Length: 229
Image (cartoon, rainbow, N blue to C red; front, side, top):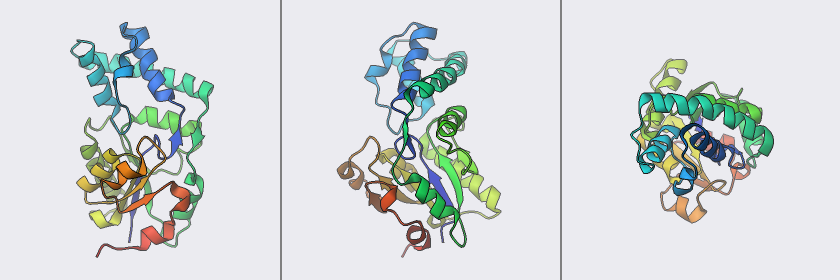
């Protein structure tokens, strides 16, 4: 039985109409005099900290702790502002799938497994009124590496539930090969949805346990009841 379901955010739960990418660009331009640095970066599936590190490196600057603190202090204000302008949408099937999970006879714990920093994740999900369902989370503040973020999410879920969670008791849901990989890193089963930056063919090549166009085609009761052979 599944006891913990972990969700990616961007491209899985919501589309922000690139508000996060634009907030990165505005922050680098306004605070560090580095325009256009984001144009050379692939954002999908990456962690915020690794993105900032790469952008400074591409600009020929060695990032310090002070650089990271300054960047994220301004990034979250730009993010909130740009979300209010751009709107964005919740991905198809998300509301119904969350409702189905919460109304199962034994509902799993719902959590976040994301490359966003925690405050960035909260700003995005509160904008879409999706923050409240998630009881735990692991974020880029916890680690720069997505696989280790997955381990933090598993351990936090175990703490809340009071038992060490086995991989087969966890489902990770995401829209990129990075999500599939980090789910595998903790032995979890993975639902890959083609609602983000990767095509079905790209996702299929990484062999998720379930592959769907979007969450409207996934039955919560079915995936949570299945056991590994």
